[in-house]
Structure formats: structure tokens, C-alpha cells
Length: 542
Image (cartoon, rainbow, N blue to C red; front, side):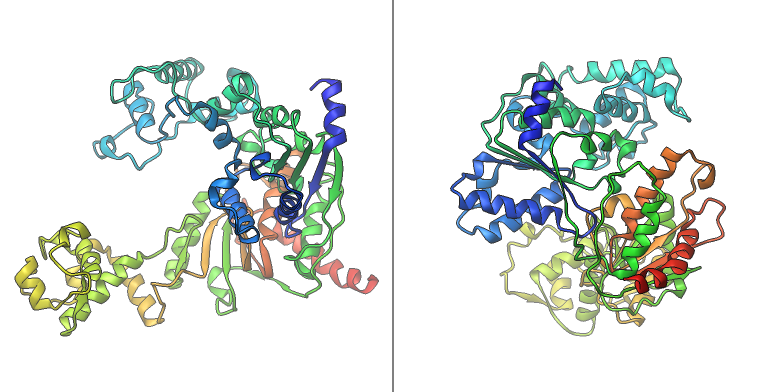
């Protein structure tokens, strides 16, 4: 960045540092509202964030405030990748499912089974391509980054060969036979915008979750920022947990501009706020110092040695958070053993609600009741594969039936090929059930759990829930890292502290610290003791 551009950005940029729950996004939205009230067009405002979820939430909230605008009015409220993509719509995008399946098949980079050859729902990740993409985002030499990896999946020569093959693959014929000059992957979109993209005449640029941007993405931000009147960049360096993916929080910390710290957290109560400060205190000088305050309520923090000891009857929503996916899966299995109904961030539930409904409909018609067309379609989706009827679950193939028509068991037998056999549901659906699934289902039924309602428990990793919140949060300390925490260097400790700080600050009411006897536990217990020893003293001082 040139000195002249640095001075220009310093004069028109406000950096908004927002600790957890202080309303970073809300602050940006208030500024959007202010500009619209001044007569600015939505086309003159560019709002970018780290994820589509964050952007969609922002658009939804803006439209509630400005009902005269439709969704299309805010067409520049996007992720950086999506914003870049707009300018190169004529160039095909590399499909991370179907195209990468073809690449891996051609280059033999992963073992692909027979079933995988038609599975376009699976994303085929490859270690070499992940390192290559990270290097591009970090703007470093891929070979140099390869050499820095403590564990290498392939030899250097093979790594280079995979990279070369990947770049060649992007210029090959598409599955339809069309020859293209290029196929863009997500990183290509940003690179292409920086080198060839036209600067859209925005007047205002707003960047949310700035701590998660990579050096390459910052170059795109700088290009846009240089042509606008005002720049607002919001983030929290203490929640910078994507360095493993190439993000550089230092570029947010040092970006030229006036700093504004949001000081009142509407999420964190007194106890969780003080516990979070215990974690922050160990980060040393690797952060921007910022004082912020709790919402004034008491809240509570507890320590547990097992998931089964936690009082799950507490009111409100729950998050159960793991450091890595392996621990997440362990927690999910333990939750099943406890008859807990849960889902992950993507909405994958511990028990398929449609399967539950199919069982209900089966029991209903076996007891002499009747079900509608849509209900019959749902039931047949599970019956079809076990030869209890030949009618497709596709609702279009039920066009003979009136939308309001109902079916009894006998009518389904006569008109839709249903076997004349009223068997118990566990026999009828058994092929779709593993024995452990049946036991889990039985437990849920005995507990009276409504499987048609959204689960109140989310079990996922800390990275996946970033930006979310829940009334009650369980933080599992087991992390399976290859070295003990106390032996990590200071930089690595700070990275770890940021992850656990992010997890702990998702809670609005209670925080439950789940410790185990595993040798690679994160030392949450140490910070809890610090919190216990000093919280009462700090409260009296105030």
C-alpha cells in the first residue's frame, strides 16, 4: 500500500472493534439506515461479510427497516467472492463437487469407490489443493508453505504435480464438451477482480467480520476502499480463529483508520464476562487492548466431568461445542446415549423428522385412520425401498389424487400396491433402521420428544457456530492436539486462546465447562480457578 493511499484511507476509515455481543453488525446496519435516510441509493452501498449466512441476515434486517425496498435492491450486500463473481459471470465456475470428482478420478489424488462415481453431493477435499489454496490466499509460495507443514500427506514432487494438474484441469473441456479459456475456483474470483475487475462506483464500503479475511481478500478490500467516500470495517481480533485457513488478523489491526470500540455487551453476563477476561489476560500484547462491559445480569458458570451430569432441563437453547470434528462426533454419540435430540449448525438432525412422520402415518393407517396425499408421499419415501408398495414418493406421480383426498390402508392397498399386511412399524421400517437407531428412537418416544419441532440443542465445532449464540453453552475441553498446551509457543497459545474465548462467549446465561481426563485437554480448569479466585474480589471492588 502506497503512502498516499495509506493517508487517504486513514482519513475516511472507521475501524469498529466489537467484542462478543456488542452489536458489530447492528452498528453497521444503523449506518446503512443513516445513509439511506440521507438519500443514498442501495446500489451506492457495498456491504461484504465473511459468510453468506451473515450477508443474508444483514439483508433480512435491512429490509425489515426499509420495507419499500425489495431484496434485489441490495445486490451489493455480498461475500467478497460473490461480489467478484458478478463481474465474470460469463466464465464457468469450478464445481467443488462434480468437477473435483472428475479431477480426482483423472489424477488419482484420492481413492474413489464405485458409489462415488455418481455422487455429486460429496465434496472431494485434497490435502495438496488445500495447501495450494491457502498459499494463494496468504500470497506466499505454495512450495514454501508446503515445507512449513509439520505433517505432509504427499512428497514434494507429487505436491507440485497435483498443483500443475489442477491448473491444467481448469482449462480443459467441461463435461458438456465446451472448451473454455478458464474455469474459476473461489480464489480465482478474488484474484481476477484484483487484476481485471472494474471498480463499481460505490460511495460507502462496509466490511463485517474483518478479522477473518486473508491477505488476498484484503487486497480486494483495498481496491474497493480506494474509490469510495467512507469505509467502515468491523471485527474482533480476539475472535480471529481462521488463521489456519490463511486469515491474517494483523492486517485488520494495522489497517489505517480511526478506531472505535463498542463497549457494552448485550450478550455476556457478569460471570461469563469475567471468565472471558481471564482468557484474554493470557494473550499478552498479541491483541488490541479494549475494555468492554457485561449486560449486568449475573449468569453462572459450572464445571462438569461428564455430559450426563449437566442439567439439560434448564430453559432456553443449547450449544455443545467441540474444538475438532472428532470430539464433535464423540459428543453427538454421547448425546444419543442420553436420549438428547439435537442438530448441527447446518440443520442435520440426530433423527430424521420425516422418518418419524412416516412412522406416525404408518401407525395411523394401521389403526384404521386416513392420511392425505402429501402424508402418503412422505410415508412412501421410506416404504418404497422395502417393497411395501410400488407407488413413487414423487408427489407429481400422485396427480390422480385430489390434494385434499385422504387414503386408508385398504385404499392404499387397492390403488397404490400396498401389501395387505399390517405389521408393526419396527418390522416395516427395519431395513431403514440400525438397531442403535431404533433404541435411540424408542428413548425419544418415551421422553415425549416432539421430533417435528426444531431441536433446542446444537452440537458442533466452535468454528462452525462462530457468530451464533445460545442461552446455555457446553464447552468441551478435549481437543486431541499433538502437543501439550503448556509446551506450545506463545503465538500458538494465543491462537488456541482465541478459539476457546470465541466458544465461551457464545453463552447468554450459563456456561458449562466439560472437562475429561484426556491428556490433551485444553486447561479450562486453570482459567476457571482464576475466575473463581478473583471474581468475588472484582465484584466487591466495583
